[in-house]
Length: 324
Image 1 (tube, rainbow, N blue to C red):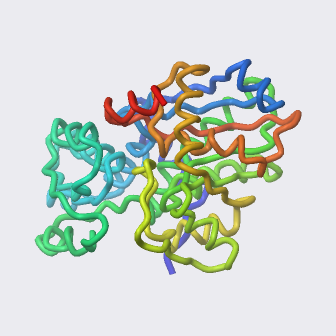
Image 2 (cartoon, rainbow, N blue to C red):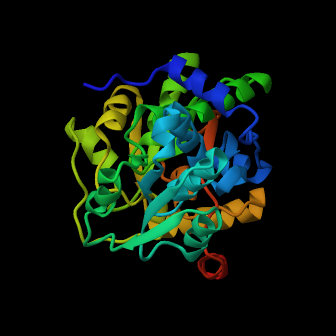
């Protein structure tokens, strides 16, 4: 069995990333504090290089490869944010990158990946096996950079947890909970390791889109279960088929639970982020904010950190949601 990444792996990742990524701040809104009856601290990874947290894990993964491995090039599959993280990291190392992306991925994300020098291979997210799409490149010797189920990826994402716990201490607050968007579980699992190391009493919640709540249902059943096919969501960054084997094992141990939110709730959270935080946040990046209105997390008099995981949204989509 693969060794689960621990706090030492996350600290090592933080050292590798030092000076290369943005240490995103903790910010808050008096209006959102008033609305929810507690103190809400937001961690805006929308301000991160490439517009999402994904560069943390991607760069850490590429750093873990030997020069010979990197020299063969890297390949990945992603709806967009991991794609940009891998493309940017590959450019920083000066190596070739091929990214398989869904044909319906936001044009902004596809365009950004190409601008960073990566080759984009489109596929049908509803019909094609993404591993089958990238397999020919792996067989040629390119190294696969998984989107979430990999110790180095998880450790890289966990650096967010290190930062936010340190930043909370600097503010003189003890966090009662941390709320995190969840697709395959790399972000929530990595953050949970760092948070639980610093404060075992702090609850960590994962948040998913409705109909793509595989982590929520897997936690309830005690084993990994897949999403039923045939559904869609505006939260394109979080549409994974099932939790990763490594991520689920960590999440099973560390999470207080998982919450599913509707597209309507995610869209309203995007409007709230613009109105009260002055931030552009993509639908999937806003689900943790949306979960604050679910009633499933005790917020009264509490101090809660919310991760806003990305801000890569097409202009037309964003304008439509803002105008609704």
